[in-house]
Length: 309
Image (cartoon, rainbow, N blue to C red; front, side, top):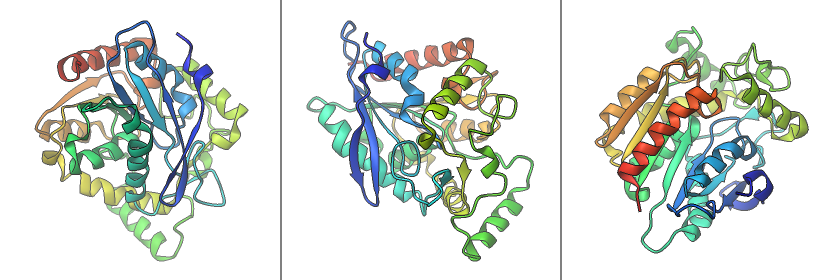
């Protein structure tokens, strides 16, 4: 199989208010085809970080469609400082996903076929926003550490909300959330990061960001945080509307998203399943082999049950 890194041919697509970088990859030619998997990455991430995952999906017979959300990766940055994560409202991400579906995914599908999805963190959150409104859009979806609730790192939630409201009221929408500038990937070490227990995969991403510094993103602005809080509040009330077959995989040692809220949300969906990987940090797909193997066992069993063609 020719690796995804060699096949990568960025595809520019135009969303409302942003130019997005997308990509599509054919399934491995020596395995039975199983349709299209939409791969959605999380906040601060980018297509190249997922080449290993893309090849694992291709090796399972899936063609893959993916993209960088607005404000990150190779898509349009939304502030003068390209390290800042900025969005006015998560409906803007809805536009990004709709653009990917319309211009990249739909042309890849056979007549009457539905895609499946694998989505991580903020990407999983944005996918759930779509599923709450149009649950029949996908045959089955797997979520990795979805952003149902985020950790406030020891701060009280009411204080975080109050400070966010105050900063927005003062017009500091594009200002850094306190501490986020220090999360610039060029400053973060394996000892200070919060996402994985695998030093090799962490370093692989760091090498990519040193070679392509324009891909890096440090962290959230007040506007992004305010929008995320609004969207999470809305989404937690939509579990019953998500009737798509769904597997949510929680990370037992997640320090970025709240695993308990993921478990609760999945159990409130009509056709949701939940699995937890005890030793996993937030980025399950960037974890050690023994942890990733547990994820893929759960993924494969779920897809066999819900998305066989």
